[in-house]
Amino acid sequence: MAEVAAENTAAFALREFGHVDIFVNNDGGSRPLALDFTGYGRIAHALLPRMIERKRGRIVSIGIHSAGETHAVPALAPDLTV
Image 1 (cartoon, rainbow, N blue to C red):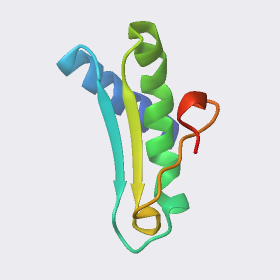
Image 2: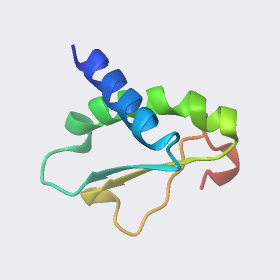
Image 3: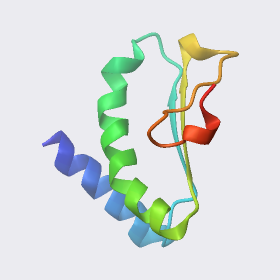
Image 4: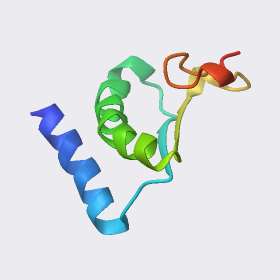
C-alpha cells in the first residue's frame, strides 16, 4: 500500500508540474530518520528515472541529526561523496 501511495504522489507531482527539479525530505522532527525515510525513499525512487532522463534534478534529505554535515549517496552522486 505504501509503495502505491508513493507512486501516486510522484505521478501527481509529475502530472501537475511536468517535472520535479528538487525533492526535499525534511525530517526535522524527533522521530528517527529511518521511520520516515522509507516513504520518502519510495517517492524519490519513483521520481529518479525522470530526473536521470532530463539530466537534471536533486534529492535532498535533511534530518535533525545531520545538522552541519554533508553526505551524498555514493550510488546516486559519486562525485558528491564526502
